[in-house]
Image (tube, rainbow, N blue to C red):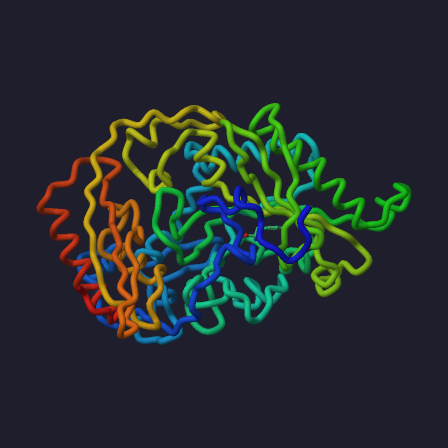
Length: 429
Ligand code: DAH
């Protein structure tokens, strides 16, 4: 098995949305980038998104648009499209696939650890850089801290990019067994399994020395054995009697660290990341001499498989033909696509500059086309004799809900080209 630190196996870096943040190879070649969103409003911004957004409340905290979107602040990179998702909390809807999955996981912990796990699903997604990164020992030069990968509200505040951001505060508040479910935010590319907002559940279980003293194992071995037993049980609870395997990996907050994979529908599927919590985290937060296990899983990734949901954008759909197919307590009811509307492809080529990143491009495209964009894919890439590099991207437009007209798509593409030129300062070809 692999030693640390290394990349997870290819299967584990599949293109699913829970691709672990902290696997060394998953986010390579990303530039640390200064702010790129200029003060100029994008057409989509001008057309009513701003009006829709006023203030939302999460966990008793009021969040206004101007608390999150700061067009004149060079340390802010949160667009309106992202602000509009705050407070929706899909995981708290009992008839939504994500809520159904969350509740099914709750059932497992309630049955096997009666009354022990405290559950949180309403913690504010605005957290400090310290909570999101420092408290869970993410190295200061780690790529996940970059403006290219994370939404910064200002230099000290981010939209959490994982639910691990709450580990330290909950430990300090005295919790020893907890589950945290929440929306998390990451700047990323666009395809059917990636969306800049998705949902995770974090699990955490602290053990005191008397719990392992009689076991003949040291604390770490004991926690690792408990972890594996508990999570294998969870996987069976969700997927039935499946084949499973453990893969060694690296996370900054656990050692040893593992991924659990199951053999499902003819393929190995990564279910979650987990491990034995670094002693430093326990020590700093009032649990010296204890050990703990932790896990983090992506709800969309599992729900897409369990409910046969083919595109991650569907989770956000209010179309009755989607929402009416799911009901409380019914895990694994197979989604029946109401119809497959045709995609429309448009290519665009430009000379890139040093600051160019694909995440920035995707954000601009989403700012214009919203959920009508299904995929943005690099299809050609060359450097000329003068050292200028050209990229050609193919944008797939497709609605989940209706047919798009030629006129509509041509307009979108025109606006996308303008916005890409203005915001990314690239030279269109
Ligand atoms: N925070 C990790 C991520 O987003 C997932 C994770 C892995 C959480 C291991 C954990 C853990 O608590 O132990 O990629």
